[in-house]
Length: 253
Ligand SMILES: Nc1ncnc2c1ncn2[C@@H]1O[C@H](COP(=O)(O)OP(=O)(O)OP(=O)(O)O)[C@@H](O)[C@H]1O
Image 1 (cartoon, rainbow, N blue to C red):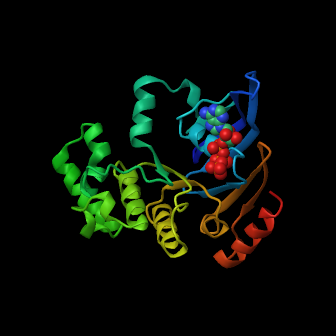
Image 2: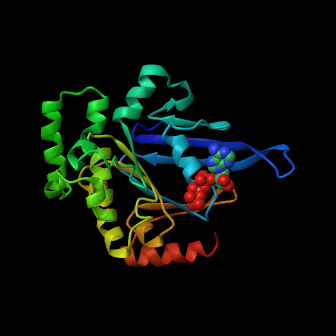
Image 3: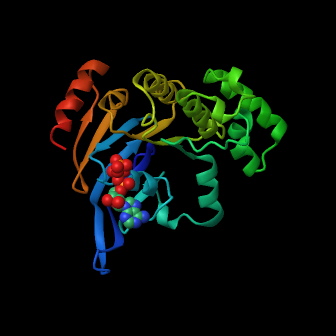
């Protein structure tokens, strides 16, 4: 396998057990055989209608949930064979999540929110403070470090959450609707932050989004429908032309 493949998803299936109105246990099949690869340095967007399994897919590749069938190789290793300390280390330091709802702690300052992974990982906090200052400068939020999350705008909250995600210098950033709660101008700031992470810091980004405008900032878009990848589009043109292509494809999903 080519060593620049960070994720290799093979015939992935996911079922959930649910209970019907009549109280009967049934199996609900969400992902029905998904295969794709993610190369280091890619920026992939995943699109599909509500409930089609985008978050489910992201959780599996982020090792937060297990597949029902099929495999996911992370840097060539089956994620179901990554256990214990190794799994904990990868989750702590190599893969970072960014969520629609930010998940910041209101009782902590922006600085301490960003420091949180370092505190939990028992890193040297003196060095950590330096890292926070550096990363806050990189993402333009130095003036916010002593504020609390409830004093921030949505965009500032998301940039804080992105700084927290980046503090351990992860290789892979998984973003679930990172602009879902933001207006269009603020969404643009946040997506440009993700582009910076991808293009300048050379990190791999996989982002779930409903918004074709946001997807047009990535390099490839996967379209999910009925539990499979219906199609994919690689960006070969300007954001504007790519956006139009994505819009056209969305009509089919
Ligand atoms: N833990 C669970 N147990 C049972 N069903 C679940 C579970 N998690 C998700 N589902 C169901 O699986 C389907 C896919 O959910 P998922 O959150 O992956 O979709 P999505 O494409 O991300 O949706 P949205 O765009 O609305 O966020 C939904 O019907 C959801 O209700």
